[in-house]
Length: 476
Image 1 (spheres, rainbow, N blue to C red):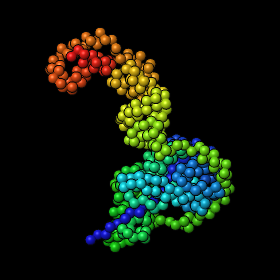
Image 2 (cartoon, helix red, strand yellow; image 1 turned 90 degrees about the vertical axis):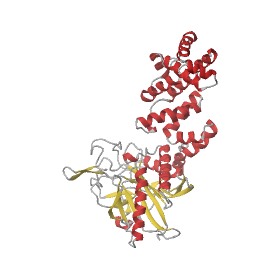
Image 3 (cartoon, one colour; image 1 turned 30 degrees about the horizontal axis):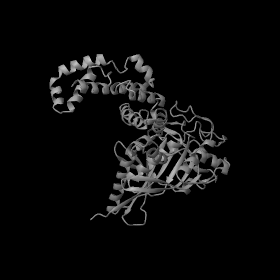
Image 4 (cartoon, rainbow, N blue to C red; image 1 turned 30 degrees about the vertical axis):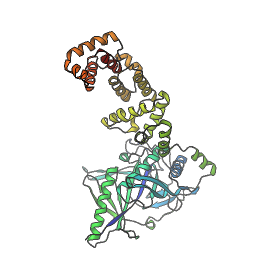
């Protein structure tokens, strides 16, 4: 009979910070660009080139630490981590081992199993490596140093997670916190947020941790969930067969849903860490820390509480709207203009989400102005355009950020309120559908809806539905 096993998971999350320039030089951090065009002697590891710390990196790292309840180490320093790899031009990485900038924090997550705190052991600043590009045709590899020296923070959790659900909830919470702070766009597909999963299994009830493995190359939440399920099962199978789990780094292949060993896991001493001799210690004064604290924005949890009281919108609406900072900002600014929060919420949650899905876009890609959405809502509420026309106008606003008032005028989409002309159309609709007229008079309310629909069709969606409804009832 097989035993019950518990999964123990900790994460190392690397986040590329949204600075304009690299951590130790003035080169651009822009994503893309021709290979080796965002480089200089410092980030390409030329002998004698000296690093200079980018102040904005420290501010972003401290802001993330404050938002995750960490203690900020106001006297921290950098260390040199020595290893050879072709995409690492200096043969060392400047990181923080002994005195990281943030320590002992937590984030609170919610899953179907309830809420829990996941501890954050530390957050440290470091530089990214370059990127190897493999050419299968010529059977060789090239190195692009554009990414070398891009500033990272590494967020190291405690081994507090027990399932893929908890891991995804933790990553999602971190992603939202960092996006709200403006510290990174956290796009997993572009590598600006990367997670390494440290996983071990142990017999249920045991206090002793099992041997852990580290999995790399995880660039989507779905891949992370699949990798966790696969690695958990692989370790259980080994233990059931009486074989040891080897501490190693493994690479996940999401296409084949399989992981393979890359290298045995090194310990800190294998990297020969020592204090970085080319950088002075970082001193964060009380005043500077206070400035960073004063710039902290309202985060999602606070927004959720406020939305329910200030806008009195349902919990479901509030969760969808606050799941993206861009969406939340758009909602608040539009509601401030038109003073109709529920209507704004409806347009964003239904039509905007539908078009985002159709165009395969993210909420961060929304580019229309709050003023134009507010103008569209006002036109609809005043009865100046019908609901059908409003949807057409919204698509134009969504795609090209047109001014709804001008668009409606130019396209001749204004609702037709000529009662005499509408009466003639209604008489024709009544004459063409005698059965529906009989059904309505016999108490079938649905028949009226059919007649309204036929009238809207005849007026090409330009008539006012409320006016049609009222006139039809009177005529019948």
